[in-house]
Image 1 (cartoon, one colour):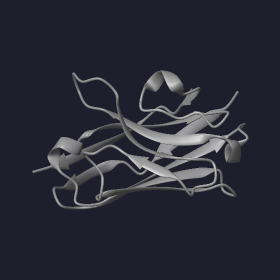
Image 2 (spheres, helix red, strand yellow; image 1 turned 60 degrees about the vertical axis):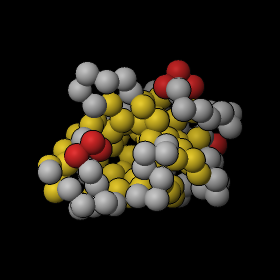
Image 3 (cartoon, helix red, strand yellow; image 1 turned 90 degrees about the vertical axis):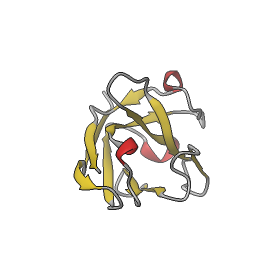
Image 4 (cartoon, one colour; image 1 turned 180 degrees about the vertical axis):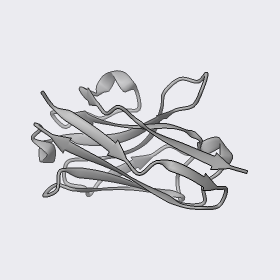
Length: 124
């Protein structure tokens, strides 16, 4: 059974930075599209960023473009999300997810496996 485990969340002041990590196990990691979603209280889960299997192609939600950076290390089976210039509206539980077969999209239903999430709180 594939597993994804996020880490790195926490409390940060507006304008600050955080780095999230997601380690995969029992997964042919290098063949999966990896993404980050987030979910704020009372809101639907929303797409944040995606990185294709090679790491050479990335996509971002407009709300985080220019502030967040997704990357992956296939040897370590880990995907990262570097978050800069954080805003209170970035407060959410952040989830990583994986999709096989080169699939990707901004809808949660695309993804086969999910982590348990890590909380990010940005104070104003």
